[in-house]
Each structure stands twice: as structure tokens, then as C-alpha cells.
Length: 359
Image (cartoon, rainbow, N blue to C red; front, side, top):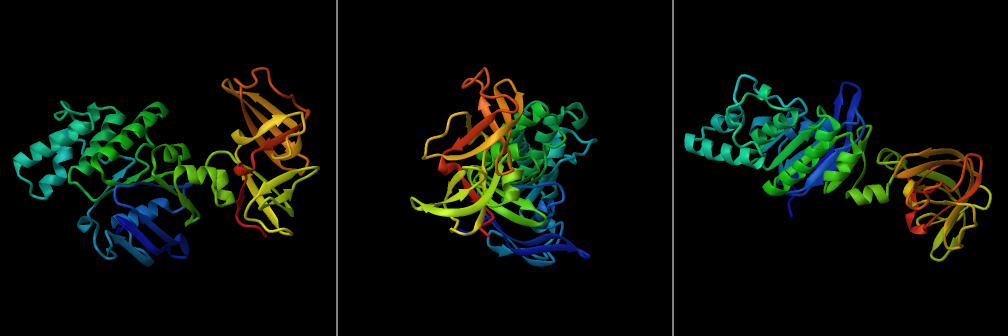
């Protein structure tokens, strides 16, 4: 199957500053694909090169298998939605949505039909005569989406489109965007620095850092199996423990960590040092010695924070690592341990992920 969007060895430099470094990426037709990373990591630059607003310094951008380097934005069958919406304030909602169709020379009947369909799809039927200034932020965002989709592009590029909305409206719009993408079947490439947003909406995510892609995978992949220390720390909270791989065990190996610590892993050789990521909600905290089959480390409680539905424990391990543990209060409403208590941390070996490769 030909990719809807493909980047092969793409780089972008501004003078001596490298914004994008050797990006290889393929987005499938009809996929909701997100570029996730901190400000300045290069994700918007990638989007602008796909749109045709920037040209790569090296490498090739392809749309539906065809190279588009040097082809101007208006001749690429993609549309872009910005955080600022960029609506025409003097035009009605109907005329904003119809703008692209009229520029292409569509007839009045076609304009009326297709604009009406799009306004109904984004739940703005009956508001066609209003000006953008008379609408809420969420409604303005839906007008921008309708305007971008009315020309039926092969792909829609969205640059942090929900960034200007308050949290409640933003969460509601996440569900709306995913529904809309599913209904129209258009390929979406979505730029965000909000990991919750990316996890909620995406079919796949590319985690970016300093112009490079650190990991590509489904939301479950990148959360459960982070490939690098950056990916482990940027998406949610992750504990990173390190130590020497001291022995082979049951098809895997064992990392020693601090006093009596044993962490079973796969993908690390005896005699090397390795870093392991484990999520706070996977870790159990208790005072009894854990079962032999579990990964386990010893530590001292440094912090206890009651958070309503859960309690967050900070623990300094005997190996010198600071670890977070989330315990649901339905499991232990009265708390398991207090600050200064000696505890055991344990988890299933399948929740250990070696990151960055052994060394």
C-alpha cells in the first residue's frame, strides 16, 4: 500500500541551526497520526514541509508516492489548520467555509450543498450567517476544520489546533476531532506537545526530540514500551532504574539494583549495564518481602501525597534512584506506609522495559 505521506531522510536547517535531522516517516491513508514533542523539537517544521510552506534542505517529501519537493503549497492536495484559526472576521461562517470552493470555481449549487454538508458534520447547521466573532472558541475551531475539509483534501495537517481552548473545551474537542476524522476518512497529521491529547486521539504517534524521531508506535506501544529515556520521561511518568546485568534467568537476565534488588528483563546481556523503565501504576508497595517471581527493590519512603482517587508515594531506592508509585485508594484507603518507612517495591517482569540499549 502506498503511504499517504512519506518523508525520506528529510532535514531542515536555518543557517547553522538544524531544525529537523534525518527524519524517515510513513503515514498510512486514513490514519490519525500525531507528531508529539516539546516546543522547538521540529514537529511544526515537519508539518510545514509536508504542506509546502518550507522546502527540505535534504531528503524528499512524497504525497501518495509522488515526490513533491519544489511543488508550491497551493498545488499540493493537503490543507492545514492552525492554532489561530485564521478565519476571515468580515465574512460569515458560510462564506468562510465556501472560500476555497469559490476559488476553485465551484458553482453556486455545489457550494451550497457542500458547505451545508460540512456545517452539519461539524454541528454548526443554522449558524452559517453568523460572523466568527459571534461564535465561541470551540465553534470557531469547527469552522476552521469545515473550511479545511470542504475541498476534500487527501490529508489534513493540524498544528496544535486546540492550544487556544480552555481545558474542558479542549477535552470535548478531542473527541469531536477523532469522530470527524473517522467520519470523513481523511488522513490527519496532528502536531501537539500534549501527551494526553496524542494518546487519546492517535492511531500512531511519533515522539520527536531535538529534530529527530525517537520512537514511532501506537499509543499503547509508546506508553508501555518506551524506546529511549526521553520517550519514557516525556510520555507520562516513568521510573528509570539502572544496574549491572548479573545473571541469566529463565530466558532473560537479571539486573542487580542496590541491596537485594533484582529486576528481570529481556534484551540485555550479562556483564553489561542497563537502564530499565517501569510505570508508577505498575509498581506495588509493601513491607513484606515480595514473591520470588516478581521484580523487586528495597527503598525508603520520602514523600506521601494524598490525591483523592489515589495516593502518590515517593521512594528512594537502596540503589539511589527516586521512584514514584501510584496506589489506588480503593486498594488501600488508609495508606500503606509513611515517610521514613522501609519498604519493598515489586512488579511483574513483563512491565520492565530496557531503554536505550545495554552498555
